[in-house]
Length: 427
Image (cartoon, rainbow, N blue to C red):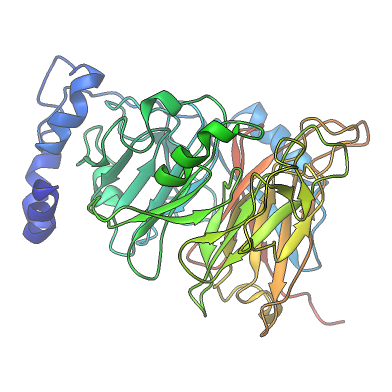
């Protein structure tokens, strides 16, 4: 990280010559060595991007599906970009590009060059790097792009500048194999999410891999932050467990007024269609416990831990949502485009149920919070489940563009949607 700090001190004028050298090598560097070269401001020899065609029959078909989506009066939804496997979204603070993670091996850079609110270009970000479930991108206010993977965290200084080149400045924050113990790596619940808090620290969720984990894992998970959230300084130091008692949170954000952490949580499967409920939680202090594995969601006890004594300090959710809807990404709305009633409200994505007899979810929810911290939740955008119970889309995350409109990602279709508002004309 010393090179990273030197880079920031030197400024963009010093970094520009490095970016100009990106096509210097004819032979591409093996992916295992690419990060080391990029951290030394060396070229990797990578010269090609993967681009996603935006003018296709699929794009036309997606637009037809969006015609059935129901929204409050004055709101419209449109196709912003085709983005394969689109998961969590990080909008660049300069408004130049938006970065989209996946549960596979790609991170996508999305650009609206003519600012007509439809993306012109979607290409793979940092094509020389081998990513492993790079689900969670997030930005600091000063333009540092962090990407939380299954078992690594990377930082890309000036990502909105470097992304035009195949080679980018890239550094380890948490090296491979040190985010969680390597023996705890799993294909399940490994989609990390990150945010920069009001204190300038990175907050990262670490889903535990089981439906309900066994007792012998409990102390290890408490110590490492698995089944909770960790926070650390932006240079990777000062790691601590901030939150415990979470099954698998894949969405969190900080209240613009209070600075408190709010997060969604996915609850236990196999207990029936209607229990346990999903959760939206509010954290007011470090170290709070939100009840898992004693509770499967809300105050519903898990079968596996039914006989265990429950800690006295468990905090229950502020909002209980419909069971198995899979509440994922969320953001507090701070823009000026939407009506005043949505100011500081939470917009969140329900991915949709996978094992419920009658599918539920696949929609965007809005949660309005009053001055006492009480919250009410209702559907905001819905219609991605058709009359046959088929999924026409599965929303994952919600993010705010600089103009105050919202982006919604969909990993089934592979797309970003844009929700905007125009005040209805008075009759």
